[in-house]
Length: 140
Image (tube, rainbow, N blue to C red; front, side):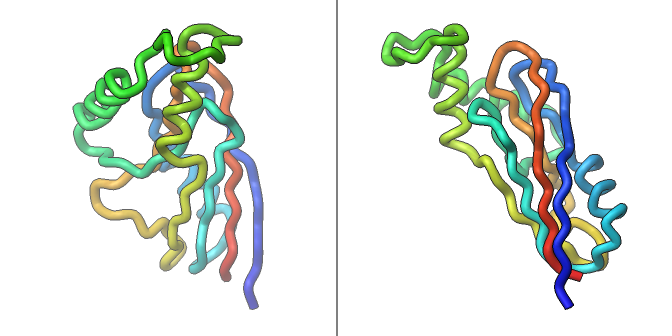
């Protein structure tokens, strides 16, 4: 029989950048007692996102940040929405170009991530924020 479980994790970011949350998610999974199924992660914000990315070389995360800085620069005159500053609308665009949810298989009670994969909360705002990520498990 399939079961379902939902919980919410909170993370404090240090401002723009990728924050690895793999261990926190894996701990939540371990506490659930699920041995197989599907885990969905959903971030409850419009200026941050979730990505699965390499967790071995920090240069990858830096390169991603630099690429997005070039692609969607802060203060771009194109944007009218600036209610919270010049990084406000660019943060929304960055979140729209990435993901607000991830789905990861659960196999033998563990996340079925590849050798070099980690789960990241990508803060797109310049200032620190508290972010919520909802975990939803379905399986057994």
